[in-house]
Amino acid sequence: MAKRCYYESLAVERTASESEIKAAFRKQAMACHPDRNPGDKEAERRFKEINEAYEVLKDPDKRAAYDRFGHAAFEHGMGGGAAAGFGADFATTFSDIFDDLFGMGGRRGRSSGRERGADLRYNMEISLYEAYIGKTAQIRIPTSVTCEACSGSGAKPGTKPKTCPICAGHGKVRHAQGFFTLERTCPNCQGRGQVIDSPCGSCGGSGRVTRERTLSVNIPAGVEDGTRIRLAGEGEAGVRGGPAGDLYIFLSIGTHLFFQREGADLHCRVPISMVTATVGGEFEVPTIDGGKTRVKIPEGTQSGQRFRLHGKGMPVLRARQSGDMYVQIVVETPQNLTKKQRELLMEFDRLSSTVTQPESSGFFGKVKEFLGGRAGSA
Image (cartoon, rainbow, N blue to C red):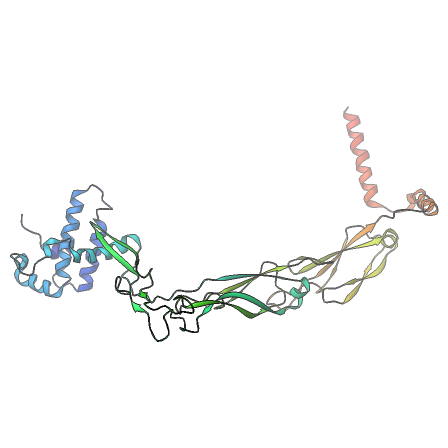
């Protein structure tokens, strides 16, 4: 059976450029790949056909011979190998298609052997007052730093790492098995692309050693619980001169004796006497900045009622404004009364018909109405 023209196999013109030939090959190879067409003998035949055509047309010398002599250029040893289709050249060609099919991402580049250092986490607890004013904190952390003896190369001073002879510096090796080209980490250099014949005595070849460092951390005013601060390049040193990782400071804010925080607002509960709540009055409360302010309450103040102090809360992070402070009133019931105090309260209760108590009057009025309704329905 006569062989099909290679240009027709790839559906390109004879004047097609190398990039057009390669694009046409990839498109058709992906369409008729055996893995996408399991059990389809025609697809397998087409895959072999377009691969054979591409092996010739991608090579300028082979293409010139084919343009002049046709298929005869590769018969009887003239230029050889195109019809073989699945030799070493096929492994290289197929690896490109394998990358496209499975997202392996193009051809390999050489590995530098330099690996980025790990990121580090540091937990820090600060007070609510420190979150209010902000602070600069000094922290000490044990971490890996670049080895000074070998400048991070991992090699003994006076020597240098060498290119891995197994992977030629790629860090990975490939093996062709049938239709597949398998790629794995080079076992000789563990993917670094380089080997060290004489490791540094100080770091054992890793290019880094463990040291304790002191760092300065700027904590801005207004930070909230759970805020994360990133210090770029302050994590572990990279392997063999690689870039350092980052350090992340996770903040937690301790409880306060007086205030509870909700966003930028502060809340506090202040107990007052029944008399003060009844006739009104004023009292002093502390503020988060260490000062104090007076709060005036009107007569008839109820327990649970809140009073707002504008701008007395926490600063808003990265904004020129502050939250508010809310004072919640808790009316305290007197205990351990004397006989005289009890008599006075009982007298006050007898006179309460002339006192306005809208909440209790309204509640018991509804109770009476509810019970009366039930009695009527019975």
